[in-house]
Length: 115
Image (tube, rainbow, N blue to C red):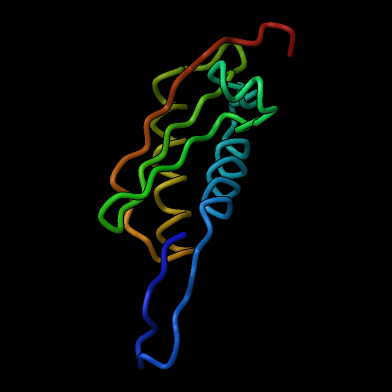
């Protein structure tokens, strides 16, 4: 968890990585052209039953770094959709949580032709 002092130093605000995960996931799913999230798990995560839902969050030096794994619909411009995902996730995290975003990497894992 990341903790930030408030403006008047009367307390602190703690942001759970799960909150950032949910913001990134829901934001990506709202972009037209995204079919669904891809489940990307390592062998250890599969054994433990850990489902990351296509998002990995890393917080370093008070900056958020996002790795997002998506499956897109067919008949779209993949590059434009990926850039839109990056822009929206960066903006959402900055506006909703007030944290700086160091980067959003979009991984296109598949194209869904059945939609």
